[in-house]
Structures are given as C-alpha cells and as structure tokens.
Length: 69
Image (cartoon, rainbow, N blue to C red):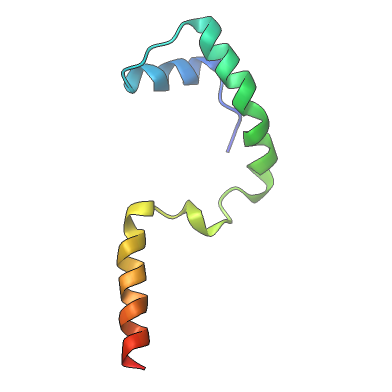
C-alpha cells in the first residue's frame, strides 16, 4: 500500500466519471496520504482485506455449521 500520487488520483477520478483538475488531485493525494502511510505496516494482514462481496457466503457457511452442531 503506497501513498497515491496526484496523477493516480486524477486517473481514478476520471474512471469514476468525476474528473478533477491537477490542483484538486494534488490536494486529495496530500490529504489521504497520511492514512496510507499509517496503515502501511499492517497492509495485507487485516481480515477485511478479503473481497467484501464474499462475506455473506462465509457468514452463511458458518451459520450452517453452527446449526448442525
């Protein structure tokens, strides 16, 4: 997990259909950068790194295991 650059922010905003100016992209990168740096030591180790759409399937599987015990 690396701090995003203004160029990356601009590209992501354009893909999302909300293009921003270079100045706005730089301000966004500067404002969210510290969060990326703070989470860098634990990146990839937290359970919510899993794809969220699969959560209901995992939860249902766990519920059915509990019901059979």
